[in-house]
Amino acid sequence: MKYSVISMAVALALVSGCASTGSSKPSNVAAWQKPDEPTHCVRPASGKDVTLTGDNISLAKNDKGCFGGDSAMCDIRMYQIMVESFRHGNGGASGPLQSWGPSSHTGNLKGVIDSLDYIKSTGANAIWLTPIFTSIPVAGQDWTYDKLDGTGYYTSDYFSIDPKFGTKEELITLVNKAHAMGMYVFLDGVFGHAKANVAVKSPKGNELKLSIRCIDMYGNIDKMSLKQARCFETEASMPFLKEVASYWIREAKIDGWRLDQAYQVKNEFWKELSDEVAKTSKQVTYKMNGKKVHPLGYMVGEVWSEQPKDIERTVFKNNALVSAFNFPLRAELVKVLASRENIFDRSACGQPATELQAGYRKMQGYTDGSLPNMFLSNHDLVRFGDLLQRARYEKEGSRPASYYDAHRAALSFVAAYSGPITVYYGDETGDETMDFAMKPDNCGKVDRCDDHVSRTEGHVDKLNADETKLKNDVAAMLKLRDSHKALSHGVRTHLFSDPGLFVDFKSYGKDKVIYALNSGTKERKVKVDDSVWGKLGYGSCSVKSLNGAMAQGNELVLPGLSGSFYEVQCR
Image 1 (cartoon, rainbow, N blue to C red):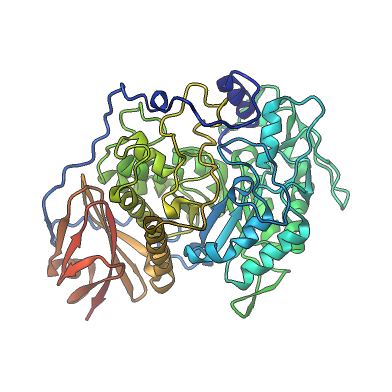
Image 2 (cartoon, rainbow, N blue to C red):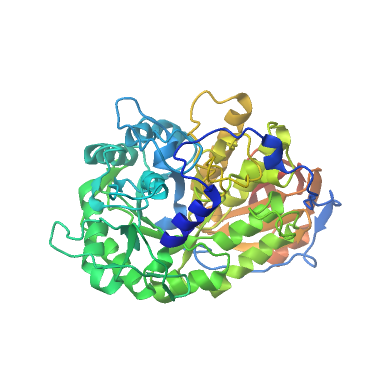
């Protein structure tokens, strides 16, 4: 979740203006779009064709994490599911029926089980489920907590599945089926805050010590009242939290945890929890692809900051957590191809592709061995399709070829990333929130605020031709990571970038790949001179297209708004 425990409830109450618990379609779409306001979003000019030579390539090698590493966690391709909104499975639980966001809030575990074949078809090899533990209303709680209960992010019992989502048996069935299909499963661990009525005694008798104060991202005490929620005295609560983390690995054989608002737990205690997860995972086995394996033990923190120093300080320092979501690089990606959520910041959009290299350089301060997880969207962000419309690169209600091309280009950048990656459900089909681009002034009243508007119904069947093609293209790019480890594990050598072009060379063992992103709207050609191969330390080389992009000899033909992959074969 984006906000702290206090600010989530307060902020939503302030923007709503009234105690509404339902969703309604806005009556004035034009007001949402604010068409009278000027836009400053302009895609880069088409640019000239480029010849790369040994003298003009960058050769910048400055990445950490999976860049040359061999951890199995580098291969993670996670498909994120907001359980309450994703899909309702007939014969399963009701779903929460009310929550934040535009869906009908009837999602359940049965819906995820019914969708496993679809999820596998997206190219994913892992699933992240938002929280599914029991949330119980507190007598007299205000309407904001009624809706927050539906998200699962305020639990009342860490050791039971909320009947609104399903049963423990359904979770076990989901995990077993996913494992049999070659997919990991991660649960969402909210280990920094809970409902005020949370059960504080564990099955083993460990105790959760509650606090009315939280730790903010900078280690300071948040002194605001939590009303119907509580944070924890982390050190005193560690035996309890360790028991939660290990319990679900033993009971359901999950493969690890996504960690909400990770800054709420001090760095040194994340190390203790990580060690507990690793130890427990080594004690559990299951079969995947016919082989007996241990749960992966992956721990990925959410630290909502575009400042790498915040992520380093809260989770990576001292190797406390192995992974955290790459908010800084994600910000650069949407600035280049669409827009950040705050369109009124003049740097939010229309940025040159050179900013992507700047984003990579931000990773230099991370502790060695850290594995940032690259992503495009999540349940607290505006969908990429709506950001395209917010930038006015696309019009509301229209999805021309350029709309899908931009999605394809953005997800190609994610697929080309060395390290674990995440795709939010619906991005693979170009999903958007209909009748939304700019949030309305009364966004809370109509469930159209930026931090929950992407929680739409899961769109997994009856895809149109454009959606099907995008999904298949995305799946093909993600699956390239299996056959070309240079993408998921490779050392990244940045070759060239200009306002509309970004070109990387990636190598891992004998596998070598060029990734090229054209963020402009016109075709561009990039010729790779033979001197480039010599500068890289190879003999004569040739390129071969991997995802349908064109190559004429060593000349790469890059359509507008595209990401292209080329295998490099050297003698």
